[in-house]
Amino acid sequence: MDAQDKLEINAAASEKAKEIQKTVKLHKDLLEDVYQAYKSFETSYQQISSEAQNNQEQLNKINTVLDTRLKEILSEEQFDKYITVFRTE
Image 1 (tube, one colour):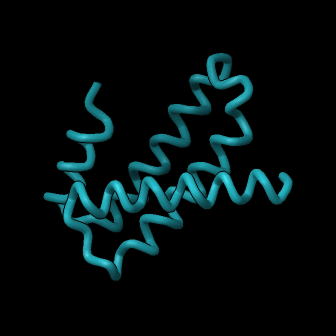
Image 2 (cartoon, rainbow, N blue to C red):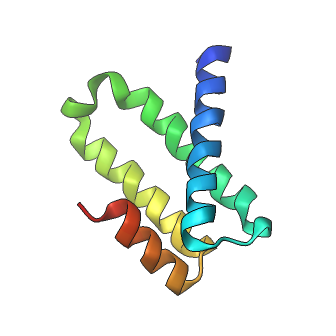
Image 3 (cartoon, rainbow, N blue to C red):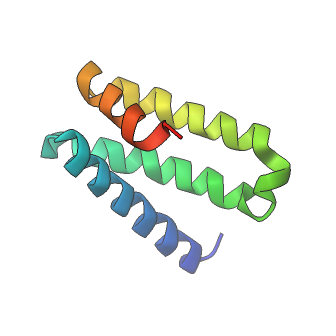
């Protein structure tokens, strides 16, 4: 993974963390935890993204890991709102 990839990962994680902060009214103290969860997700996603369609099982796994981590960070109400806004299709 090169410096450009890391910049893209950090930017994507920051953007997602800020989206969640606005959507679920996340306290600033938890923003860094959400950012780190998304940074981990984006790093894993970057590794499989070139073949994401062939790696649906892996994509489901990293989504589950992300959701589990966010469930630990967010309140029940915040997590429910996150699921509704970001995971309902």
